[in-house]
Image 1 (tube, rainbow, N blue to C red):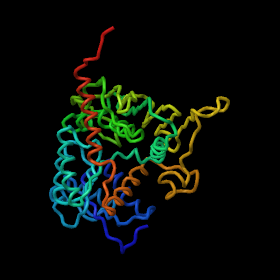
Image 2: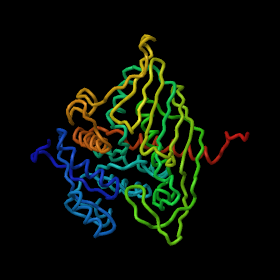
Image 3: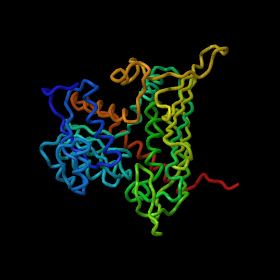
Image 4: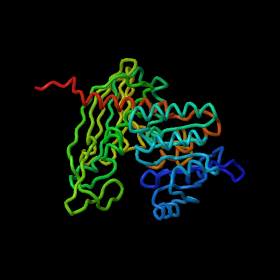
Length: 393
């Protein structure tokens, strides 16, 4: 619902696989359903393979292409750099873009190490003084039901938080013959299930509760240490090569940790790609002194709410169908009762970022917030490596 008279926001994106396709869809769709103060334009798509990036640009609606992200960052006709690449490239691209005066949207986790994330956060602080903003792409927090959960916590509906239970369950690597991918290489991904999906749970838990994690005790495990090389991949799964070549898995397949939050709340977290039958079950339950909230992304349009002050005769969890115009974001979509999908979190992310840029405000999650998540990931890995709290039975 932007108009040609509005100032354009010319986007340059690096990467065009799963996340690149999702972000492209978000940039295309956001101005068609939301009244935005600027007009997003899919200006330039960057990727190393000239033929492949040209095909992707034609498919996803990008006007021009580049084969070097450095050339993209230097272009005067690009206002924002959207980073949809593996984690080992995030810091260099983001810092260069911010120093060049470009706004930045960077996929999660922010980086592969605390040191890289600190460098990015410092660059974002310096850029903010020049009116340049940076945001990390933790899209799940913009699922209307999770945004509503945060509002209910802020309104005191569940009282003081006591317990947090967070799980992110997938099964796409449960087949031992599934092929190697960059997500299984530490040098590219930083960590495995912990950073790829566990980071979402950490961000969601801190976002909804408004509390920061202050300590952890952890266990990491790798179930399959070698996987076939090559093969055809569709989405995250696929089939490997049949010539016997294998690659070493250098990240975790599953992560489990307990946590302490500022203010005294405690939590338990689990992230795994081996929960057979669970496709994308990002769960969050919060118990407070006056009530509880529970969410599962496999039922993303609903939120479970327990009012601990209700009469015992009628007390119990109730289901809130988060599909009404009064709910976060939903009033811009379909008639009452019609649900949303996975892609909508990315569209809401684009909407909020465009508005922050136009208003000159700091978008959330900022690089500072993403750095806090990175510190938790690092603490989990250090705790698991030390096994200082492990006792054999």
